[in-house]
Image (cartoon, rainbow, N blue to C red; front, side):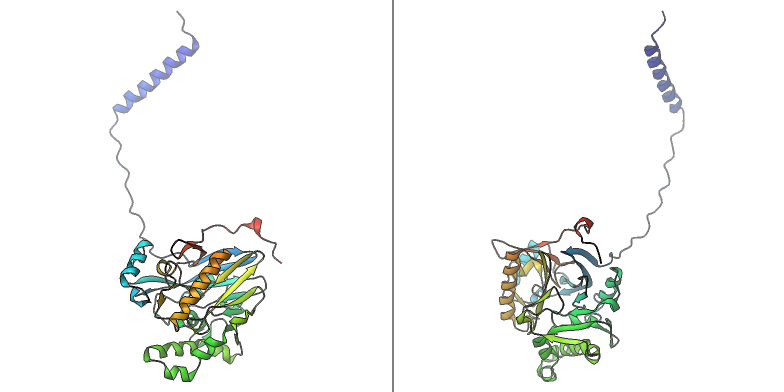
Length: 342
């Protein structure tokens, strides 16, 4: 009897598979392929910059590096409470609390503004990367036309100079007049304790070439002045006599770059009353922190902090106890939300 074509095809396919299996059983087992060793681990981090848009302002966070701080520097709390709060946020205190130092460059379309300049070599080898990361982000130091200092501590101002020369030769440097009067005073420096005298020297050295070039300006942050269009000063005195935040506003969006309002996110958001030894007036600093946190939460502002985990940008949310830090989510620069460049 003649088989249908479909049945003959199935029988042929079955015979072919069986034949291949039988032939394969006679072959020697395959030798395992040689496994090459992987390349050496790189063990370096990516360039330290992060970019986002605030309205039509391009904001780039710059990582200067880190410093390990002793938890004993906190005031108005117990060591046990500090350790509990650090553990709650999985923050190690060994060999110290890893504390970022951040700066920010904002391209407003008419100005290239740098807020704080990092520590350079003033506080050891783990800091001093602002100029390097500025270049990695696509800008040259000579393109910066405005530097806004939140205050004159060395980890914010030392990066203004290298070898006694201005790192940002075309920039005008701005700082609150109360900070300038305090840190640039020879009388205050002479009256300061031995441990504090170095801070006065750092401040003087940092601004000296800009003063010589007549590119150093002061203002009164209490009046809410505008050093450049779209940027308003926000008085945040306490950490230093003239400590200042800067509110950048473009369209309906705003970003407050607040300097040293918070030194540790795990502790001071939950406990705004906790101050740190670096505060010139720790009581005033705590009051200012409470006000700034409340305003940021109520206004749903973007905020950027000099010592928040890099990139240090996010939102403040009120919680049942104090506040919570909500960091920015990494994302693209959305071209569909941008106005054409001039």
